[in-house]
Image (cartoon, rainbow, N blue to C red; front, side, top):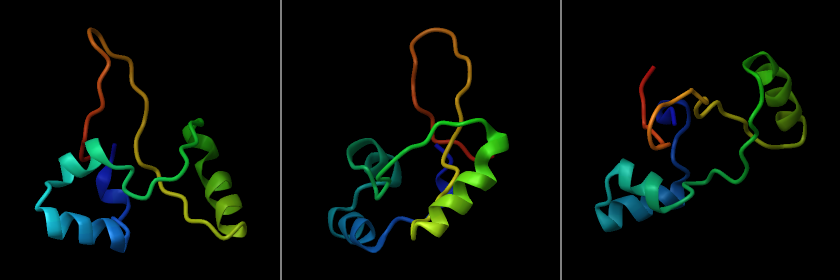
Length: 79
C-alpha cells in the first residue's frame, strides 16, 4: 500500500488523533476510507481515474501486486 498517494479522510484523522493509533495500525484495523479497490493493469489507471471522477468519486493508486516467496503479506511502502 502506497500511503502517500492519498490523505486519510477527516473522520479517520479524528480517530487517529483520539486513539493515538499509528498510521500502520490504522491501515491494519480500519478501511481508512477506501471503499472499493479496483485491481487493473497500470496502463488503465488514467481511464479508471477519469471514469471515477465523472461519477463523482476520487481514485488513487494505493499499491501494486508483486510476486512473493513465502507467506503473502501487505507492505506499507514508499516508492
